[in-house]
Every structure is written in C-alpha cells, then in structure tokens.
Image (tube, rainbow, N blue to C red):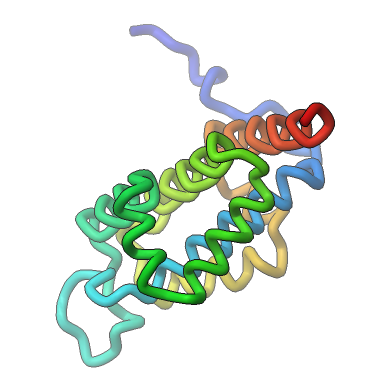
Length: 163
C-alpha cells in the first residue's frame, strides 16, 4: 500500500485554523469525561508507593475504552456514582440525541489511547492544562480525532437547528 506521507500530515492551513466553538465545547466535555475516569482503582499498572507515578497500562486503557463505548457497562458504572450520573446527564443535554451522546463517549475512548504509557500524574497534568487551553489540547490530537470532534460538533449544531 503506497500512501504518501502528505496524506498523514496536517496542512499548514489546517494548523493555522482555530477550532470552532462547537468543537471546543465537545472537546471540553471529552476532557471532563476523561478526567472523571482517571482516578479509577486499578487504572494504572504496577504497585507503587505513589499511585500518581504509576504508568497507565494498555490493559487499563482498553478496559476504560470498553466501558466508555459499551452503553450497558457504562450505565452500570454511572449508576454507582451521583457525580457520574450528573456528568452523563450533562453529556446527554449537550449531545441532544443518544446517537450524538454515543459519539462523544466514543471519541473520549479514542483519546484515552493517547495516555497509554504515561503516568497518572502526567495524564492529570495534561487534562488540567487542557481544561485551561482546549485549543492547545485540540492541536495535540491526531487529525482523525480532530475530524471526529468537528463532525460531532457539526451534527449537534445541525440537530439543534432542525429538531
């Protein structure tokens, strides 16, 4: 399969473009959701005197991704926490439809993979910075992840204009 590297690079025009407000809003929810799943027990691998220094394992990422993507598993986890219920309700309100809500959880799961091999402390620092500078965080995502966020944003905007 012969594909040019330019297919995988971001164009200089795209680099200069600022994400639209809707994309930033979706990304803010993604950051919020990822921050909520971060402190789960057993999230990182290896026993440590300082859990924040533990490395986020591939298995932990895969488990978290499955929970974010599987509505039944997610509902069970959400049912155990009033804070998670509130987060899920806010996500529903933002999404406007169950299809869009699933897409928000799906992109959150995709972005979770970006943290594999990092420490819990690094993930926490990245998400804290992302909450202050969502545009900067958006630029750190893969082109595919940015495109998904923009697509979700446009779908939500369209559905709100045409209920």
